[in-house]
Image (cartoon, rainbow, N blue to C red; front, side, top):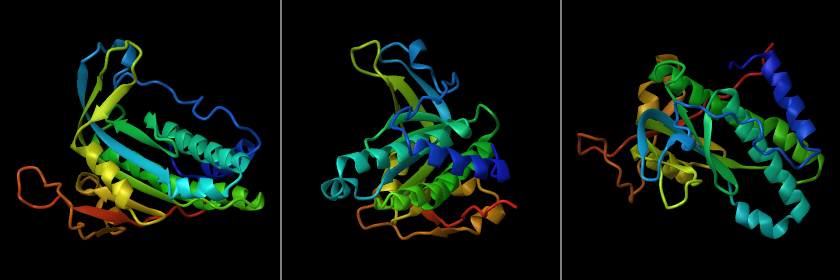
Length: 245
């Protein structure tokens, strides 16, 4: 997938069409064998993959629910979750789970090397940034509904994807250092900000690293770079899509 005029037009069109209905939140998400299909995993079984993880959610959704009419709240969630899921799907990622007012997505190296995987997940984060700020919030404001603010966290590395519990129909669970980092970065990201872990930064091309700014670790940051005593570094990512000609 690429950011071009056709994608830009489709993004605006589908967002505004989606605003008129409340279904198919993730109906177009397709399964992938490379990130293990849970149908082929036994309880207690796992697969190791090289992957990248993205978390995105709506800022202060609980507070929003106290001051927003239920119908408007449902419309907000429908637009947000459906479009975030669609963007992940467009770049061949997999939704690991929805988190109420957000989602967790996984990318792997099925269609290329680690650099390609990182490019795809950064493209997804950048497209999410644009989609929320422009077509989604434009539609909400047109309906006189409070606009959305978001936080995004991204990192990558070795992941274990397995099936746990006692039921054969349990959803898969993804665990690993990268998943922990991505989740934590999403929690501490600034409003309308994207934070990326060092793995993602390392695999970016030099021109794109120019949009990354190393951040100060919070006092309670306990994540250590493997094989060192250094706190695991992370960066803000500031690039934004331009409107295609």
